[in-house]
Amino acid sequence: MNPAAIKAFAASRLSRTKTDRVDAELIARFCLAQQPPPWTPPAPEVRELQALVRRLESLIEMRVAEENRLSAGITVAAVSSSVEEMIAHLKEQIARTEKLSRDHIDKHPGFSPFFQQWAEGLRQRGKSKLSVIGAVMRKLIHIAYGVLKSGRPFDPDFAKSA
Image 1 (cartoon, rainbow, N blue to C red):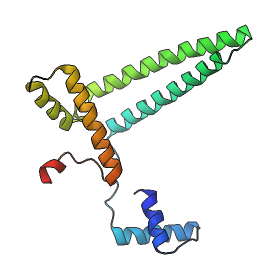
Image 2 (cartoon, rainbow, N blue to C red; image 1 turned 30 degrees about the vertical axis):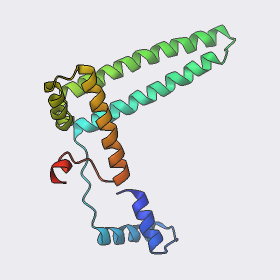
Image 3 (cartoon, rainbow, N blue to C red; image 1 turned 180 degrees about the vertical axis):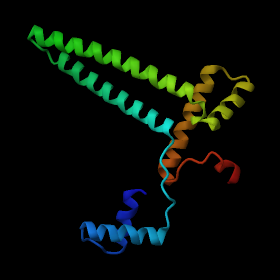
Image 4 (cartoon, one colour; image 1 turned 90 degrees about the vertical axis):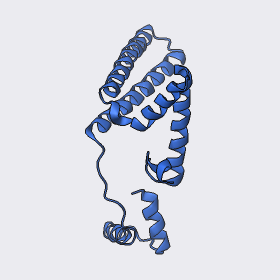
């Protein structure tokens, strides 16, 4: 559950006390009243991809920090060469992690049947590869916005049932 929902529930109960016992009781009351669906962990392949993406973000962040150090005008040659070596190493790690991510996605093509079917329909209508990619990216942004706005998980069957 979104912690903001529980916080709002606490505010509606005019509860301002913050102890572990009160919080546990509040969460129990929230679950009793709202009956949220049970949490199910993501599939192992999704967790692996999430870990790869998080690692990639960390590596890029470290590379940017090192590039900023280098552009700040390091005057000591030994420090400058050390930073340059670190940047080269980080670039290698970024490329390696990107390749691992692509390979992982290729091994698990079932993360997006909704998009695959939709993109195949565009291809059959004669759209070029780049326009299909652009259309899928645009659709993904719209879906992500809808998920964030509604607070509900993505449901590929929503359009069929609505």
